[in-house]
Image (cartoon, rainbow, N blue to C red; front, side, top):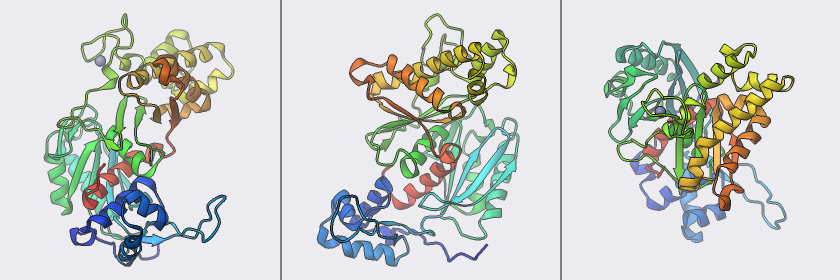
Amino acid sequence: MPSLPPPVLLTTHLIGDVNRSRVLQAIVDHGPSSRADLARLAGVPRATIGAIVQGLVDDGLLEQQEPSRGTGRVGKPGRPLWFGPQAGVAAAISFTDASVRVALVNARGDILEETSRVLDTATAGSADLVVATADAVAAIRGATEPIGVGLAIPGVCDSERGLVIASGQVPGAGGAELVMGVAHETGLAVFVDNDARVQALGEKWFGDGRGVPTFAAVQTGHGLGVGLVLRGALYRGDDGRVGELGHVQVMPDGEPCRCGLTGCWETVATLRWLRAEAARLGLPGADRLDSAALAALAGKDETAAELQAVWAEHLGRGLAVLVNLLGIRRFLLHGDAVGGGEGLRAAVEDSVRGASLGHIAHEVELGFSSLDADAALLGAAGLVLSETFRLAV
Ligand SMILES: [Zn+2]
């Protein structure tokens, strides 16, 4: 690997000026932009944008991209500005059930380095989690020094206090020990948030949510998680407690849920339901079935095709709650459902529309995340960047 120049530290001095912050916010919100677009988007005078941008370029935060000629325009082509490759490099952490994944991510959303440590996250204690995480960060920070660490945790997180209130999937992450331990071992500032919210932040900063004021990023598979961006802001509720869409009742006569309620969305829209139903129907490979395998079976087996239709109907029912309650019209799905391909995507979209209020149903758009598995890592980097840039998320 070629050696990299030293990272650009985003000190308060560097970005202290209000106009500079507004320009950075506009770039985060809208992606690579010309000077003229930045002046308009950031609401700064055209006469001053040149000097503001030049300062950011001189500091290595922004760089000029190749000229792009807008369609149908005449005159000088715009030269879009975008973050430099060494701007805002953060260490981003996400957990699966069997490992901790650690990456260095820059402000462009490029993954510069990545590693992982095998870990049974269901049984690991806080000390095990700290050791594995700090060890992985140490292994990749040689090339570039990160400005901070962002943790995506599947659980209830109070990001303002740096606290994991509870995590069913990674119980050892509960409390303040993980955040404090990683901060102590790495000597870096550590930021934490719920993984579904972090995925939404990843989409907002780096993915299909960029420039979209209101959308939901939805995790599917063994569990259901929803991150909401409402009118341009990541919704965190009070103390990070935002409720759980998975436990909204979608089946009035449904099965009891592990939460004590009945007919929750989680009881009919996770892989546990899909596999149990596939076994009842006698489909092959029922105990390992997922959306990808079901889509393959559905092409040649009528029973599988019918199950896929019910699966899509179930997935859509919970999402329609967000349409009817909050007017969400844009959905980005992550996880298992992505494997179901266009057939499942279209069927879930139809299901959401069918259960939504008539005047907005036709505007509902459901897509599969193009970031998918990387969304949590990129969003974890976004946590660090937003704190360092002091930007609204
Ligand atoms: Zn429930």
